[in-house]
Length: 101
Image (cartoon, rainbow, N blue to C red):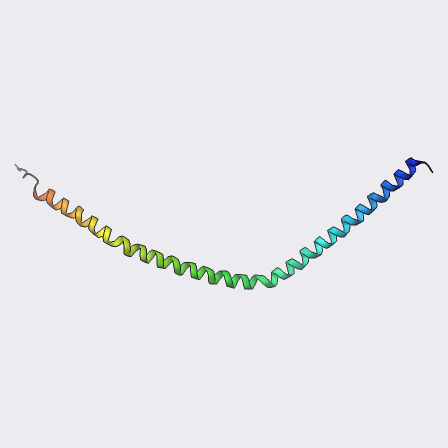
């Protein structure tokens, strides 16, 4: 048996071993994906309930922040509108009288 025949035989066996190894890894990966998909089906209702609770808390916080923001803004808006109203009244009071024909 020549050395080239031995190397060819070793190459063929190496290819077969790698193919079997790839199939084993593929089988394990598919099995794990299948089990995770089944576990996810049982896990999703719990996650939905938790996310709904979290959404409710965020909405409650959003309303509180909006209410506090409006309470802080209100005096500034009132003072600004009061100043503009006084300016308009002063302008109307001190405007020169227009003669009508």
